[in-house]
Amino acid sequence: MAKEDKDEYKGDKLSAPAGFDGPSNDRVCTDVLCSLLLVGMFAIMTAIGIYSIQNGDIRLILYPLDYDGNICGTNAGDIDMTDYPYLYLVNSFGGGVCMKECPSFSSGYADEYTLVTYGGVYKVDGLADESAPTVEMPDYSNSPNVQTCTQENCYPNNNPKESFTSSGVNSGMGYAFYLSDTTNYLNRCFISSDAYTVIEDAVEDTKDSITDLGAAEDVTSFISELYSDLYSAQNYILGFGFGVSVLASFLYTYLLRIPGLLFTLIWGSLLASLGLIGFMGYYSFTAANNAADEDPQVYSDDKIKGMRYFGYFMFVVAGLYFLFLCCLRKRIQLSIGIVKQASRAVQAMPTLLIFPVVQTVGLLAFIFVWLFYAVYVASLGEIETNEFDENGVTVMVRSFTYDDNTQAMAWILLFCFFWTVEFISAVGSIVIARAIASWYFTRDKGTIGTGTVVQSIRQSMWYHMGTAAFGSLIIAIIQTIRAIVAYIQKKIEEVDSGNALVKCIACCFQCCFAC
Image 1 (cartoon, rainbow, N blue to C red):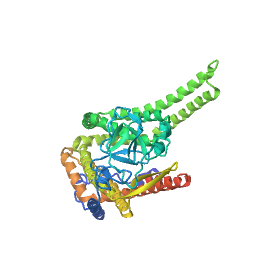
Image 2 (spheres, rainbow, N blue to C red):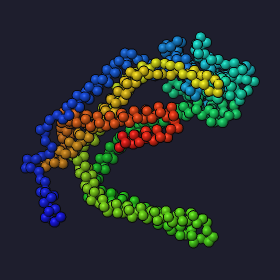
Image 3 (cartoon, rainbow, N blue to C red):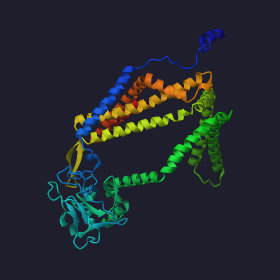
Image 4 (cartoon, rainbow, N blue to C red):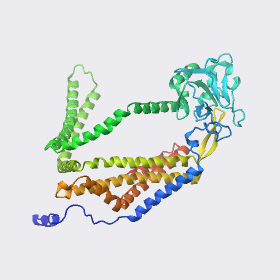
């Protein structure tokens, strides 16, 4: 193609009209149907919440469920558990009994001669620690599923080792377990790790046999320590995470305006990475040559050859990286220019830094309402009895089951969550884009300020909510499909965990929807 043909193909240089001063204020509402669908979605979510509040019982979720189907801390069962709000776990299936208080003894305390069972507390005569505080439990004797201990089924020959493998304890999978020091978390009494060590020593067993029962305690201990650390460091987190970060962002955007600083930072880091890759190749190659010249050789010929090949590989990577920088140098310069303009825009409109905080507050408000509804939906489940047969011992454990209508409501709530979160994010993107465009195209930069951001918020919320709703709807649909595929994948693995083909197909679906 001749030079004059290229010039003709490019066309005339674009120039703004004489009266052009940024994005037009003459706007119309876009994607109104999607706005109405979003409002309808909120109405459906509210209807589900009201129905769940009227028909559910949040106590079923907030309080633990014992093996007999009673809700600890409530009277929502065959036995009044109002005075027994805590659940003591007895086996690795989640079965336990309600207690008035979580057993709290000295650190690492465990009495291997006292058992907490589905029918009460069992003590080995003459061997149990009578000085330990009394454990208060409800009367399970009239329960149709009660299982109690005798010397024969829980403590044969008064031997702790035989007790651990007895039908009652059943290696942590029975209807009885040893009284131990516990940690309270969400009204669940989890045996402390030190107490597990005492039990393992007493029954002369390895950790693997009790790992399942102790796994929950380990996770709970981690979460408890995490939250306690966060609570202790809350002032530092808020101070550095919010105050210092905001000041640092303002300082950073200001420093970016210094001529040559951003250019130096970007290209300096890129060239430093290139130099580091090259140095790794040089060091590996030199080390290989030095090792080969040693007499006698300390390293084998294979290791020396491996170091030399690694040096060659890093030299190739460095060369490709250099070519990559050369090919993208214009793009990098363009990115530097965009960042400079962005820093100037933030300097002119510092209110933009506050808008994400407003988004976060709105998101937290929605999540609070959504969680409230979701907990009530979860309380609509029915209590069912599960039987686990391990080593010839049948153990009863109660759990929740949900009908098709309740599951449908849960999926709808999940879709509402995805759509709303993405909608809030999309609105933020539109507001910021509208404000930046106004700043960029306005000739008199002195007129730009907080009013520009406020006008951008007003126009985006009034005219372009439908566009944000439409884009976020597409993403929410994809996220919901991914969640459904993950649910199906989990169910298939429960039925046939060894089917590699099914796992591969499910992973392919997940990868496709993730893209």
